Length: 225
Image (cartoon, rainbow, N blue to C red; front, side, top):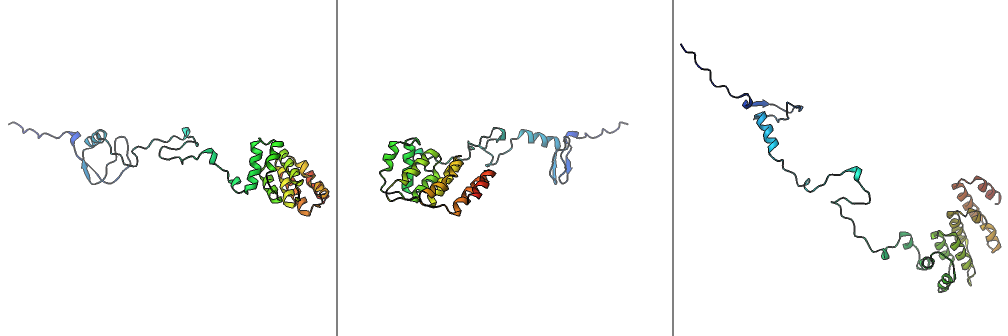
């Protein structure tokens, strides 16, 4: 009697598997979402062959590398603001100045911050100069030689007298440019020009020396009061 032939068993590679829920992926156990009958080998091959659709937000985006980043350049997605011509660019400090103070500073720039007859001829075009104008110019200037020449030129103008604001601005300008020894002589200059210094002028000198850690000058300025 012949024995019955066993039925053909399906290939193990085609055996459907059932996975429930999410589990930690590994090399032999890929991620398969629960509630899905699938063949693991077929699903893995399909996922490798079929291209993955890209979202609209990823298309056209370049990879950002921090090591190659230059802060002066912009990303492709960013648009640089339109640059204005250099002739029309005015600094914020110059915008706060009065028109007469800007005229004086422009006269200095035209002559490359060198005091001379050309600068004096430009300044003589002004009808009058006030102490507030002198203080504005001295607060902005960074050249002690030109600032001193302008300060003494303004003091020689008809009907002009320096006040405390112009003296204080001159002291700050000298200290800012490193000429603090000349700034210490301002009280004597004020006294010689008929404007005795007040406690405020000595306080300004003491504050300037203390900010720059000049202890001996703080002491001598305090003793001069």
